[in-house]
Structures are given as C-alpha cells and as structure tokens.
Image 1 (cartoon, rainbow, N blue to C red):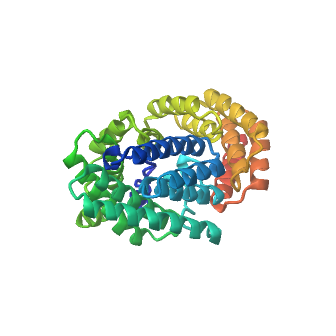
Image 2: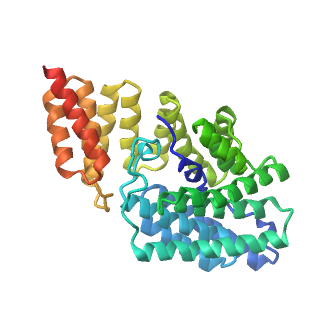
Amino acid sequence: MHLRPAALALALLATGHTLDLAFAQAPAALGEAQSAAALRARGLEYGYNLDHDDALAAFDAAIAADPRDPAAYRLAAATVWTRIVFEQGAIAAEDYLGQAKALHRRSAPRPELAAKFRAYLDQALALSEERLRTHPADADAHFQVGAAFGCLASYTATVEGRVRDSLGPARRAYKAHERVLALDPTRKDAALIVGMTRHAVAALALPLRLIAHLAGFDGNSAVGIRLVEEAARYAGDTRRNALFTLVLLYNRDERYDAAMSLIRELQELYPRNRLLWLEAGHTLLRAGQPAEAKAALDEGLARLSRDTRPRAPGEESRWRLALGSTLAALNDTASAEHELNAALAIATHEWVRDRIRAELRKLNRERQ
C-alpha cells in the first residue's frame, strides 16, 4: 500500500484541543471557557460515534458559550467536512491508502454543506490569527492557527480535489505546529500534524519527496510514527484523533497487530461507530486472519442492521465486499460468490465494482 499525495493534507485534520484558559481573564469568562470546553468534549464524543448532527449541535452550543474561541468553529467545520466525506462514501482507511483510486472523483458536496464549512472555518481562521497577532509567543495561539489551516488543507485536497492548492495551508499548519513544539515541548498534541506529515512525505516517490522538501516539509517515517504515537499518549482531545490516525498508519506499514490493538480500544470508546468493525475486518484480512475477520464483520453487519441512522452511499456494498473477500480466504467459495454478487448489485463506486469483479474472477480461476 502507498499513501497518495493527498495524504499530505489529510494528515492535517487535527480534531481539537481544549483551549488554554490563560486567555480567560475574568471569572465569568473562565466559566464560559469551561462550559465551552465541556460542550466541545461532548461534540467530539458524538462525532466519533457517527452522530454528526448531535456533534454539530454541541459545537454550535460551544460557540454560543464562548464566541471568541476559534477551536469551536474549527471543530464545527471539521464535523461538516466529516459529514461531506461520509456522504461521498469515504468510510475506511483504504479510502486514504491508495486503493480507492477515485479519491478525487467523488461527487460534489451539497452546496449548503460547502457553504457551512466555509463559514465556520473562515471564523476559526480569523479568530486564531487575531489571537496569534496579540500573543505571538504563545504556544496555544500557534496551535489554533495550525489546526485551522490543517482543516483547510484537508478540505481542499479531499473534497475539492485540489491537492496542489492544499500545499500552502498544509505548510502553514505544519510550520505552526513545529513552532508549538519549539515553544512548549510538552504540547504533544501538536506532534500529530508534524508526525503525520513527516510520515506522509517519507512515503512519497522520490520526485514528489524532493518537491515536498522544497515546499518546506520534512520526511522521516520512523520519526513521524513516533510523533503521532506521542500525540496518542497526550491527555487531550487530540489523543482520539491520533489513535484513528495510527490505525491508518499502522495499516499502511503492515503493522496489523498494532492497528488491531487500537481498533479494539476505539471500539470500547465509541461503540456506536459501526465502521470500526468494518475497519477491524479489513485489518484482520490484511493480516491473514480470515476467521477473525469474519467474526468482526459478522458483528459489524449485525450492528449495521440495527442502526437506524443514515448510511454512507455504497456502505452496504463495502461490507459485502469485505465479507465476500473474507469467505473466499476461508475457501467458502459458494458463500463468497453470493456475497460478492450481492455487493456488485448495490455498489455505487466504480473502484469498488472493479474490486468485486477482480474477486469474482479470482474465484472462477480457482474453480478451474
């Protein structure tokens, strides 16, 4: 597997950090900031459980509680971004590992969602840059700027498909979070963007890696992983995002046992996120453990059948493809063929159809 160049920007969607209360002066302001922090934490809990509407409502409430806090606007923008890619059918690590070749041929987002993303993010950028102008030596001011530009880079690359145009905000995010670590080495939440970017650059082909270096990005896979792992151990909101990021990176590096350990932790934290069972199935199948993969997928399909919330376009076909591939690995040819044909009938992405047809051809060859 290999990371596409878009991973440079995908690396940069940092999902928040509790605001440093040093900026709150009066007791009333302190209470507002604490209330906003609690609402942001609630929004993150909803978001990671796929409750997108509830997450956005919580972030809107956080904005109302502390309208000068850039983090709440950024998290609201990130929630809209997540909703957009969910509606485009991007639901698994493989969508970002180079296997989903239609990454930049997704449908355009709903105009109202695109406008909402821009409104939230514009406010996050304005407030964070204003704070940096008045507190140029403050680590959290740099963090907020970097996180906002990271969100912009991710959206530009993944939703708009403009990878080249995402590099400017990506570089701003990367440099801002490098500055955070220089000002305050204990702020390991900033290590997420820095580490993911370094890992992504190291995975690029040499010509692209040279271009990335000229653009101001450093590349080192081992250092990148270590930095993201440090972010995953940091006590803050960004820790959860670092855990999800490590699932992607460990899969990319074929460290499947490590990825599964994190997936199980995330399943405990976010039991309403049915897609974690799909991710477990994919990871276990890559690891050559089809029996365990089938158990994970069976559990996930049971959760899917009970879940009344919206599904991503083509989501069921992805589950059926994973199950069919797993059954084929278990040499249950008849059941595999049934699942794969069912997946083909409802698939909405051409790359998924291509994968299904390839699996069916493989089954036919093995029959002969």
